Picture 1 (cartoon, one colour):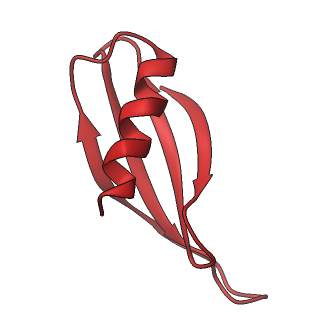
Picture 2: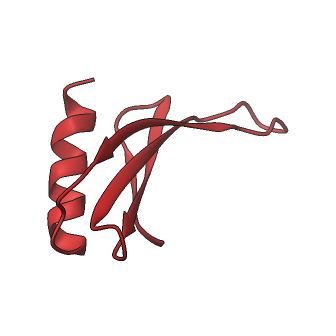
Length: 68
């Protein structure tokens, strides 16, 4: 697993993008930016298959997250 990007969609929503080269898949974890002093928790929101490389993972994950 490789963390490939941290994507801030707006003032509240952030996403961590991951690429799994062994499975040729990618995923995004949604995280709400917490208030100061609080801890944020991520939850998986997007999983994609048939991903060829890191660049394709980032592009397809951004497209998917922007549609949420």
